[in-house]
Image (cartoon, rainbow, N blue to C red; front, top):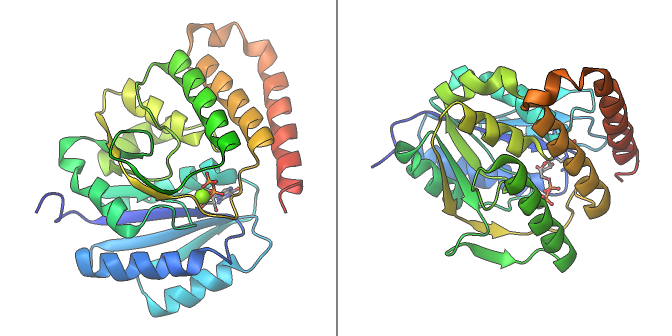
Length: 269
Ligand SMILES: Nc1nc2c(ncn2[C@@H]2O[C@H](COP(=O)(O)OP(=O)(O)O)[C@@H](O)[C@H]2O)c(=O)[nH]1
Ligand SMILES: [Mg+2]
């Protein structure tokens, strides 16, 4: 079967997920132990957790040798965690990631992996016809997401309907090639990743996926949207010819960004 002889590394970024992550780790380990025997590893990338996510991951890891955590103390964010996790790319042929809350079931992630022979990166989409959404996001969240999408499309012209879906898989070679260009540590990380892949000429395939919107989201629509908006503006500037002219303003941008990030962290729980 297609894509079945590859080795697979799955990353799960996790921030205070003690209540949501355990069944997800068990489901993924059980499913992929069967589908990718001895060819599957699952690494949970934690940072700044104030709950016992690490204890939960270690407990599951004691039972399933495929599962292990890596921990960073600093507030590196979801994107920062994935940037660190992607440094493990040499461990496998294919590297993917999903959210800790089980929004993407193992079977749906496997569907993306199956299509990797058609592209260098396969991304799940909640907005393409054929997507199966079990619980819809709130209207406010959907609205924010559509506005965000139009901004991203205007800035980057990637023609990807859903850049933000938490399920993606890539070939090792592509990850290694673009890794040093990854800069964005927050939820806008995915755009950074996709844009770098496109710039290098890698093929991205977007496929309808299955998704369940889970309660307990870390996203607070107002603040997260603002941070993401600043990030995409920053990203657009980083990759624009104006970058060198804007040099003197860069510290200001960085300051605003970190202020918002810091407030977000404190206000999270
Ligand atoms: N390591 C790490 N993971 C994070 C951070 N913020 C969010 N995440 C993870 O990113 C994923 C998506 O977050 P979630 O709250 O489910 O977002 P939503 O599904 O888009 O509402 C989850 O696995 C979170 O645990 C963070 O600051 N650090
Ligand atoms: Mg979620």
